[in-house]
Image (cartoon, rainbow, N blue to C red; front, side, top):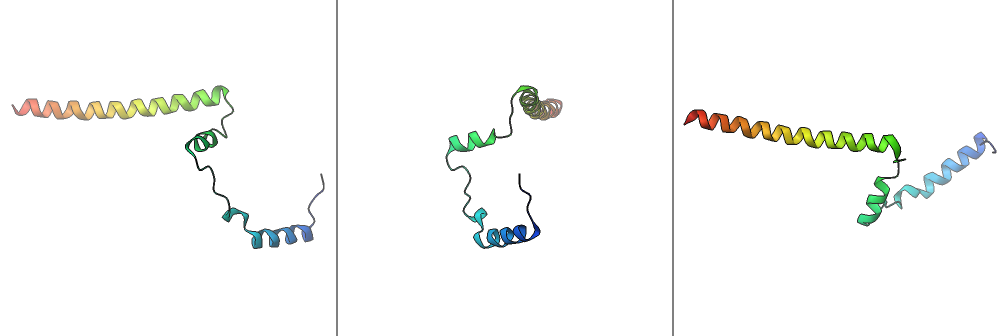
Length: 81
C-alpha cells in the first residue's frame, strides 16, 4: 500500500477542506436504517450478551428504585393514619 507523502497529504487536506463531504452526510433517515446502524459495532457473541445484560440490569435497577419510592410513600401514608 503506498504511503502518503507530505505534499500529497497537504493537497488532499486542501481538497477535503474545500469539498466538505461531512456537510452532505445525513446518516440513516428511516427507522429501519437507524435500527440497522445502531448495530454497526455489534459483532455478536459475548459482547452483545454483555450489553443486553447491562441494559436489563439498568432497567431492573430503575424499576426497583420506583418500587422503593412507592413503598416508602405507602409507609409514610400508613403511619400518618
